[in-house]
Image (cartoon, rainbow, N blue to C red; front, side):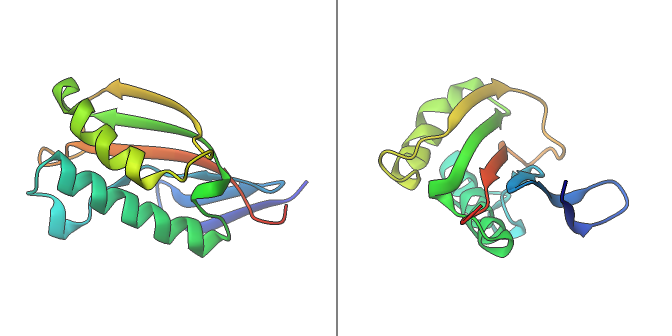
Length: 120
C-alpha cells in the first residue's frame, strides 16, 4: 500500500494519493475572482484545479469523480456552461452537484475531485 500526502497543513492535505488515485481537497476561486460572478469564480476554481492536478501528475482526462457545491442553486446553468467547456469530450467524471453553505461568504462554488495519477 502506498500513501502520499501532498502539501499537508494543520487541518488538511491538498491531496492524498493512495495506490495511484488522488483525493483532492476542495478547490475554490482564487482571491482575484472572489468578488466575481459564478462564471468568473468557476473559471478561477477550474484553473486552480488544473494546477493542482498537474502538480500531482494528473489532468482533466484522468478525473474519476467530482462533487460541485453551489451556494445558490440558481447558478447551476451558468456554472454548467463553464464546466461543459472545460471537461474534455468523452472524459466526463461521475459528478454530483449540491447546494451547500460555502466556507466564506463571498464564495459561490467549490469542487472536490478524485483523479487517477497518469501512468498508474
